[in-house]
Image 1 (tube, helix red, strand yellow):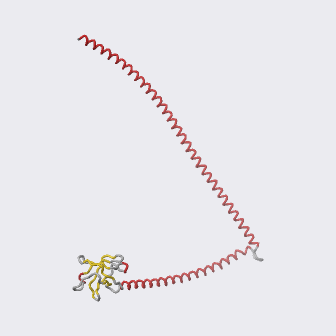
Image 2 (cartoon, rainbow, N blue to C red):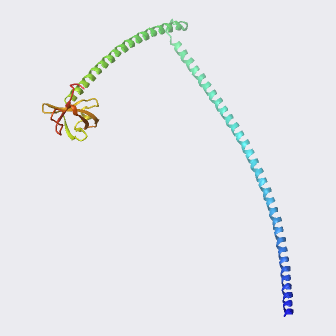
Image 3 (cartoon, rainbow, N blue to C red):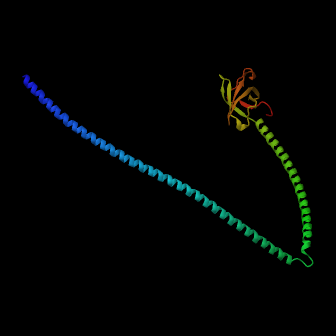
Length: 261
């Protein structure tokens, strides 16, 4: 039995040695392949870096050339502007010269038409006399304009006075309209002591308006306004003003306390 085990152990060791040898050769081959691949990759990388450097250099050259082109283009534009300016100046000078020649020809024609005995040397004195006459007429016109402005100012003042009179009449009319107020109590809140009146801003009621509540010819009490709306007014009842034994009720009339508000 021991012998068999020894033989089996020897066989196992031989097999293990064989496989170890085979694996060692395969690992060596793989390592050689990896090394060769690394060398190739590094070579390709170096070639790529060289291409990138060349492209970068070309891009730099392109940018430099583009800058030079831009500079030259700006110079050309400046030269074109100068040429255009010079052409405009030349045209303007030529137009001015043509105008002067035309004016000279016109003056010559006018001189030829002068009456007998009138000489060009007397034109200055005649022109000065005409200017003097024109200045006098202008002075008269200015004085007349001042007179007109004065009259217009008087008219404006008169119109302002008229507007003031009309405004006072309108205000007086509004006062009389307010004095003719004939509103009614439409709601009463006895718990909180306020009422609602069926008149508001539309009837000329303001915060300063003083209101009386009447029933027939009897004054029931006074109201203090709390808020005013378009056609409604909320007011507090002044308790101390209530007539003895009376209280404000819906339907009571509301009038102004004072003749003028």
